[in-house]
Amino acid sequence: MKKTAALLAIAALVSTPVLAATQGGFVDPNAPAASVQKGGFSGPNGSVVTVKQAQDLKDDSWVTLRGNIEKRIGDEDYTFRDASGTMTVEIDHKRWEGLTVSPTDKVELQGELDKDFNSVELDVKRVSKIQ
Image 1 (cartoon, rainbow, N blue to C red):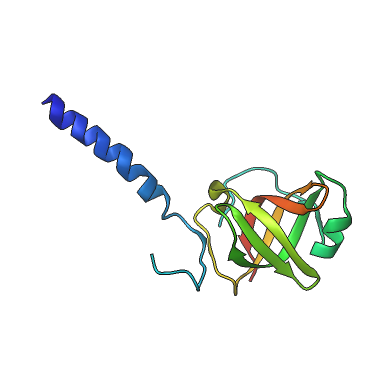
Image 2 (image 1 turned 45 degrees about the horizontal axis):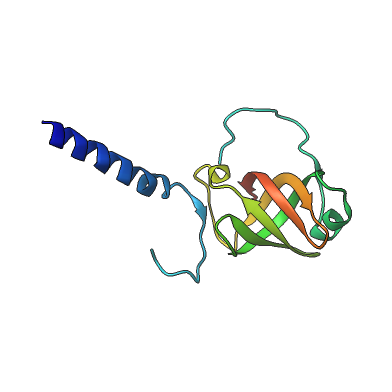
C-alpha cells in the first residue's frame, strides 16, 4: 500500500511540469515539432513608444511596444521588432497566460525598461495580440 501511494505521488510530481508547459507561449515556425486579462487596473497602461524611443528613456520607465516577436533567443528572452528597430524582451512563462504567438502575429507588450551600460531590455508584464 505504501509503495503504491509513493509511486502515485512520484508520478504526479513528474507529470506536473509537462502539463504546465503546454499552456501557450511563442511558436517558432523554424523550431522542430515538439488572452484575456484576469483582473487588475483598467486604464492607461503607459505610453506607446517605438523601440528607438524606448532606448532613449530612463531605466524603469513603464512603456508599451507594438510589433512582432521574431524569435526566441533564450529561456525567457526574445527578439522583438517594430518599424524603428529591434530590442530584447524578457517574458516570464506566466505572462503568456495561455496565449500562443507566432512571428506573423502583431503583439502589444507592456512592461518596464531595464537599462544597463550597453543594453536596453524590456521586462514584459503583459502580452496581448493585436488584431
